[in-house]
Length: 465
Length: 47
Ligand code: SF4
Ligand code: SF4
Ligand code: SF4
View 1 (cartoon, rainbow over the protein chains, first blue to last red):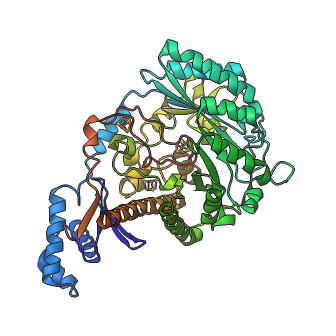
View 2 (cartoon, each protein chain N blue to C red):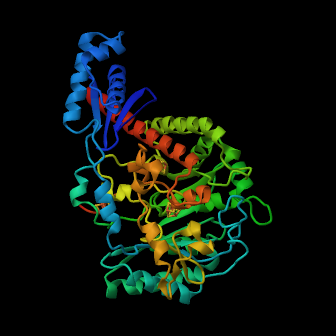
View 3 (cartoon, rainbow over the protein chains, first blue to last red):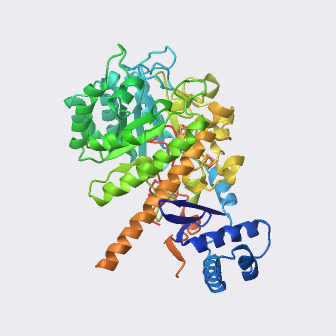
């Protein structure tokens, strides 16, 4: 399968199933498209057919291009078949262990974000705090169900976890005490809105947290509209200085400022750049996921503008990179050479099996986005997994189980998307949230264009040298 | 090669043999908690 696109002056051809990516001239771009078309019709691409189709090109040019295409094909770098289905199903059937927990430390929040999937952080009126005992049991559960796996991930999530920070600290201490006797290593992470962030929390987090996620949406008016304090007041001025300090103390690594864009700021590239201008180097800004009746939900008609925004952002990032003031944008990061193996790429997010969310009272859910939906309760940290059928449904979830993903060019980078989004839009975890897919595909294209442009620049520099 | 410049050659098929060890992170952790992205993840298996 071939996916080809033009972006920022580059003609890019992805050979989806081999993972090869090529940059080609206009002629070859057309030849490859024609070749793929013929492949689908099971007819051969001859030089006569090419001449017939592209009278503007000379015979010599077309012969040359065709020869190159066929050579790449012989090497398995063009038109490679998808040969992974069996191994992926086998991989999915393996005995899995639990690797990661999302601990809902506090179902309460000191902000009233309009788009919060938890309903202003309160998970629909429930304002429980996780007790130390429940958290401790969760860590024991994780260690017990992690098999031989050494690295265990624990995210302190909410609501707002700093509202219950004493428990966070005690749990980190308890987790560390388990490391040696059980031959494990905990990787703790924290997501916070910053309101309660102070020097003590930063100091603790810099010692113990492998990553911190700092929530802010971008420009002041954008942030304050969607992320107001409970009294309706601005939060931007309160959090920005703290986040800047935090990022500096972490040497600009192992953190993310993370925002959400909505229909109210479709020009979100400005928010990303605003965060970069504030000095942040690790930035993630993602589309809101919301039911269509919400005023801030992204609609299909917004897609063209959003695509343009991603293009703008990619170009500006390249420019800044050249000027020596580059930054990372989470969704444009792509590893074309040493990324994950195919099994990992095609097997989905691991929700419900390797990754579980724990409520303040110890119930287990497939992931943070299913918390509070009774029909998705898997069990508890005290009694283990009880809903085995449900677990198995998640366990077998993979790209080949989803009609939309099987034939999607993005499948090796996207892994079949988010089960929660799929469920919330289509009532099944085996579907895909279409607006999200369109944006995902665009981001992959931009990320690859950036790689092509950087390689191109490097080549030019080498030529000059 | 005059017409085709290869940015990355085939990288996927070879990962079938030694891959699948399951040592890497789950893919919805950290910065991105509403979607699944594996394209930017690192493999923890020194193949
Ligand atoms: S660590 Fe590497 S080889 Fe192992 S499952 Fe993850 S991506 Fe595949
Ligand atoms: S972009 Fe959508 S259709 Fe494509 S693999 Fe991802 S979830 Fe599936
Ligand atoms: S279902 Fe969605 S939100 Fe949940 S872990 Fe998977 S990708 Fe993340």
